[in-house]
Amino acid sequence: MQLLDDMVFWGRRTSDHISGLSEEEFVADTKSCDAVCWCFVCIGEAASRIRQIDPEFVQLNPELHLNSAVAMRHRLAHGYDGLDLFVVWRSAIVSIPALVASIDALLQERASYR
Image 1 (spheres, rainbow, N blue to C red):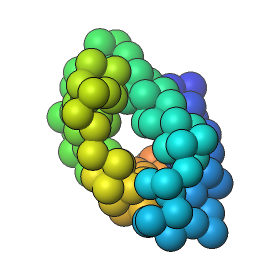
Image 2 (cartoon, rainbow, N blue to C red):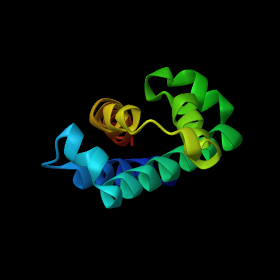
Image 3 (spheres, helix red, strand yellow):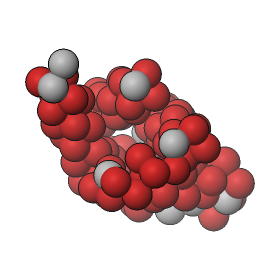
């Protein structure tokens, strides 16, 4: 599914944007913050489209936390004025690598059935 590939792409971009940065350096670097936030928006948008196209997929794959990705996208897009960059950082270093690994595993499993 292309949308899963898109999520992996933006997840890897997120990791690239924070590579070598400490939490404090990230929060102080507006370009990195903006880049990571944009990646999160793209991931959340892809997750939202998956929910619209195939709601059953979301239920069958809870390990992907697609609803959380959509919620983060909404928070960034609509609640930008109260954004906590430390939460963004934590999500970038914990949630995004877990998401990418889960999608990679799912895609590999699907490929092995073909």
